[in-house]
Length: 80
Image (cartoon, rainbow, N blue to C red; front, side):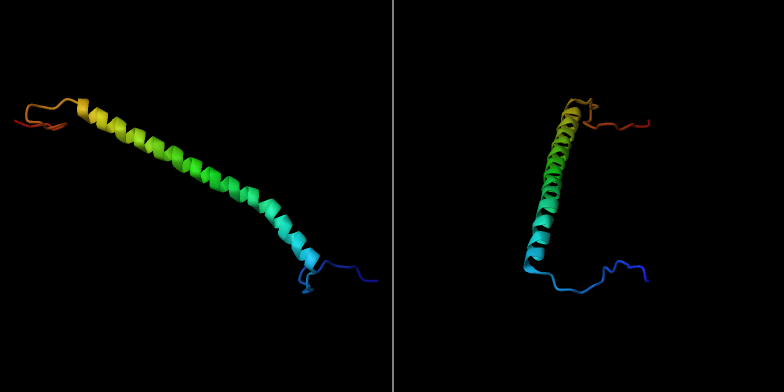
């Protein structure tokens, strides 16, 4: 008596209810994951965009109020 083995490579045509069940299962499983990935990507791009804008504004404010020498140069050392 031989032991039965699993065979996953069988090429049987799927019935219409089996195809519909597989399609419904795929939608139920992957659609929420895909939606969460899109929402997370949009949220991350929004947060990083805001942080980028804050960094630019802070750099501009710092450059406006930083000290300049008499010739209008910033952070320049002149050797005499």
